[in-house]
Length: 258
Image (cartoon, rainbow, N blue to C red; front, side, top):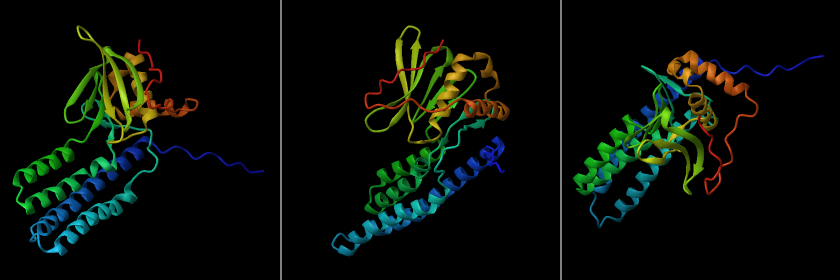
């Protein structure tokens, strides 16, 4: 008689090392593709308007950059999000950027090349600055001992004491993490974070948010890999960890926070 044991879940340090390696490779791939696309697009865009082959090459270059980058990074994409966030010094757990978010510099650099070739220097400079901004400051959600930080173009800070509910909603275009907040003197409000730019297991993210909202004493350990490993073990041991169904109206009940 033989039994088949369930495979053990990867250790937290193995998952974190894999996540860091894949993120680094995706960033490198995006900047390499963008660096190649910028001069190529500039040369093609500067061809005379009456050269029909220039228009054909323009479309071909754009398609080549998009398809080439996609093929280059596709093997690096994690088809299943590991239930983990990354520790960040001095004390935070942060989400990783999704492959699509990390690819943004490649497309923005190519756009800068087209604008440069057409003589639209202002657009070219703007696209270059945006490529640097999105490359260095991708969207993310960070959990710290004092607050939840939601970073898009700017960072919104939600103190734990003001967090009254957490849920996943749908805006009609994409799924969003919705944080219900009660700001003294301003009343109830909502801070939203689109989930598409994040490479994260949303059920684990909800698990962490709800745990730290309900258990304030555990927040002091945020940022420690050992604490992340404990939270991950609790999450995996919980029966059927899952996200509540997301509806078009986004009316699924929020989790009350004491």
